[in-house]
Image (cartoon, rainbow, N blue to C red):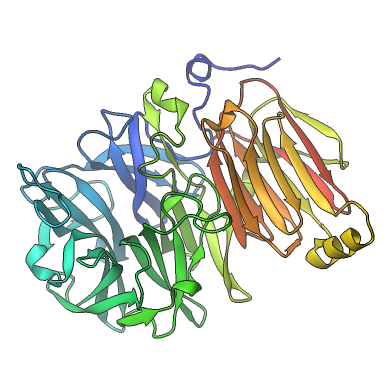
Length: 476
C-alpha cells in the first residue's frame, strides 16, 4: 500500500527530483552558475499566476550538489522604467568580484502596437551580487538605439563570457526580413558595449532566434539557439518551437554565416526549450533546460495548473563532445539517489510502489543492418519495447525510436520520433509527472511531462540481448 503525505494527496503531480516553482509559473532557466562551491539557478517566474500572466520576475534556488535545491524566493523583479513589464531572460558571469547577472528588461508602451516593429523597449541590464544573496543596483547597458537598424524590437536574452581579456555578448534577434539572427557585442569592462556583427544563415532559418549560448568543447565551438518558425516534420522540428545547436567554423566570438543543415536538436521530446549551459568549478559543461514550451495552448497542457503551479526545469545534464556530436547525460551526482537495485528479465513486469525511479537498459544489440536482414528473411524485425502503466510506450523498431502516449496521461501529447541507426543503451528517469529518456549515451534525448494515475507503477520491457536494471530513487 502506498504511503503518501497530505500534500502529495492534494498535489499528486508535484515533482520530487526536478526544480519547480513554489507556486505560479516557471519558464526559462537564467543566470546558471557555480560560485564559491554553491550552484545558483535563477529562472523566469510569475509567482501570482500559473498561466504566466503577471509580473515576470527571476526566481532563485541554490544547491551544493545539483540534486538538493533550496528555494531562495524572488531575486529580481520589475521595478525600474526600463524593465517595468518584465525581467526577461539572461545569464551569469562569475569572477573574483562576485556574480554578474545580465538580463533583458521589457517595456510595452500603451497603445495599438504590434510589439514587434513598434511599441516595445528591450534593454540589456547588468546587476551585480557578491554571493547571490542580495542584488546590487541595476545598470542600463543597451537600448533599442544600440541595435542594428535592420532588426525588429525583438532583441533579448543576453549570454556573456570572457575570452582573451575581453567580454563578449550574444543576443537573440528577429530581423525586419523575418529572419532569425544572433547579434554579437564586445566590451573591455562589461559596461560599455560595441556592436561587432551577426551570426545568421544565408537563407532564413526561422523568424526569431531566442536564448543564444556560445561555448567551446575541446577543439570545437558551438552556438545554441531556439529558432521560432521552422516547418514541423515527422522526425525533425516536431514541436512548435525548437532548441538546438550548430557547430561554428569561425569560433565563438566572430560574426559568421552558418549552414541551416548543421542544426541539431537538443531534445526530441514534447517539453524542452530555452536551455542554458555553464561551466562549473570541476570544469564540466552543464546544461539545464525549461521542461515546457511557450504557445502550446490547444495542443497539450499541464494539469498542475489546477494545483496552482506549472512547469519545471530539467535535471542538470553534463555535456560531452563525442564523435562529432554533443551528448547529454544526467550529472553523476544523481546516481547518489539510487536505492534497491534489481536486474529484471526481458518481458517481465516490474512493479514500483513509488513514481520516482530509474531504468537502465544496456548491452543492446539492435542495428539497422540486423533489422533489414531479418526483414529480408521474412522474420520479425528486431525491436525494443517499453510500456509504462499501459499508457506510455517507448519503442525502437525499423530504425525509429518513438515516445507515444496511448491515452489522456499525456494531457494532449501524442507521439515524438527520432531516426536512430542502431540502439545500444537507454537510460530513463521517471519523476512523478516527468520523464527524461537518454538514448545511446545521451546522443538522443526525449523529455516530457507525464500524468499517470497515482498508485503503483508497472513497467514491462521487451528487449532481447540486453541487460535491464531498475532503481528506486530517493526523493529530494
